[in-house]
Amino acid sequence: MVKTWSMNNLNDLHKISGTFANTDKMPVLFLGHGSPMNAIEENQFVAGFRNMAKTLPQPNAILCISAHWFTKGTKVTAMEMPRTIHDFGGFPKELFAVEYPAKGNPELAVETSQLLLPTEVELDEHWGLDHGAWSVIKHLYPEANVPVIQLSIDYSKSPQYHFELAQKLSALRHKGILIIGSGNIVHNLRLVDFYNMNVDNYGFDWAIEAREKVNSCLLDGNFQALIDYEKQGQALQLAIPTPEHYLPLIYTLGLKEKEEELSLFNDKLLGGSLSMTSVKIV
Image (cartoon, rainbow, N blue to C red; front, side, top):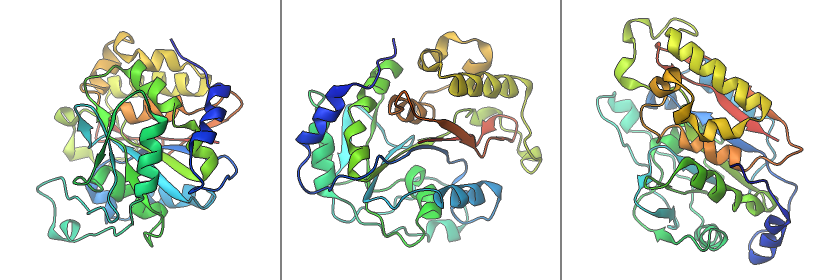
């Protein structure tokens, strides 16, 4: 069952040290990151990221939940300078040459781990920024002038667990922290139609159905159906064969407060079995 944001989250503000000044509440994003090549290509989707970034207040730091850090237990990056991880293969050398030298924020990592108690969160000094984070954040902040930390996704836990864990992060929004989930809602790589990758908004019938069903739930606020996605029929089972690219959306939804508006952008299908649909909550 969906749990709503409560006054307990305001109380969590008092747990956060003076490292972060109070700010107006920051938006929350889910970014459909797509191919790593989006890091270096010019297309409608990266233009969408840049245009959306123009609407954001300047954050103090970014907390990113990426599909590509799927771990046993929960971890948060805590190093001063996270490395740029090229966690892919078979792409041009130009992509492997990309570096995104954003600073980390060890203080934010500690505060995040405290907010998530009693869940034990490991302060990680090894991971860095994977392409689910840097390939899209570089379009929002090309100068790499905003510190970035990553929170991992515990693969042993349910979508309901992740939704409720995300709610504990709400206080960070009042400290100038931009929280970003990065994945893809429709993400079935085994069924990609590479011959039609350049066809605009091209999707198989089941992908079209899945996108329409998810979008309807998003815009109607029916988040419980999205948490229980495995019960929503064959189209969603094909769209979400594994959960890692979908769960960052659940984190984003867990942070939505009752009075906030949810809007979609980059809302198109790609290659038959992928979607670039992205979400902004403000």
